[in-house]
Image (cartoon, rainbow, N blue to C red; front, side):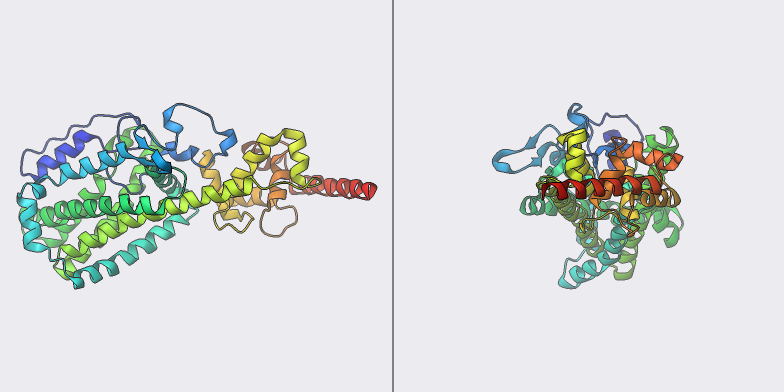
Length: 417
């Protein structure tokens, strides 16, 4: 997962403290660096997050749901190391707030935490949540890593079981801290400083502070790690420009720094808490469906006999993790989004070819029986999909296989009766 190096954080902290601005980038490994800003951070690493559990490679710590330092006592899972690092990073950025410096002075002068400010902050977060929901449900390849890595980050924080109370108690203070520190620095401190530097041009000052806010949420090394990493970084920067623009607009419209602080905090809480609930309940749904008993003369029984129980469970987990609206079938959109987790970035046209090949009854959706019949002969979703796109698996022969099995089942049933 791409992260902001600590040296970059310290350099920015020196800037807001009025000291020399020195950028020093130091690459860090995924094992020893943590996410500074708990928001959507694109990463190729997230591509493992939706693999069927039975087929997932058991590599060292990087593929586990929580990193070293997770507290699992009494059934509670919290990655204390990651929480501690996040709080420490924000504490460093907010140094002038805690020490009574310029940050504290700006808050005392420009922020008034009144009921009216709270209501304005709540209203201000609504468009951000709407935008976030559009991104979360989008099948666009451009935001695939953005969504997957957010899910993976929340799994690292809280594990793979739903913990509403724990997630609330951890997310709320982290979100409040992040909103307070970042809005004080980027809006409360930078905009006035940039106003002086730009000769009083408010649009320029706001644009520059928003751009800096966005750039500092991305890992600058991404631009030197290949085309895809650079594209991911650009997507993240664009996303943060949008959120930063909303926060800046709230400050300009109300003249009260408390409003963007509240809005920012609520939005970060939404990302933390509701992503945790969404991801873990989806995992729970898939696990429950995978554990359901199978009928003796079903398609599931057929493929369990041919390829084993582990294959069947893996297919169930893959299917039901992909079934995000939990209606028991896969739409073309759900299939395309799920394939991103395998690193397969199909176009809309290619995903339609795959869906058509699997949807043997032409209902417009793929049920689990059809999914098994589609995946079973090749032994894996990726091989079946490649076969469809290369023309080796067609709708007709998939339908023929399904029909032949139905006849076999009927014949067996008649004999037994």
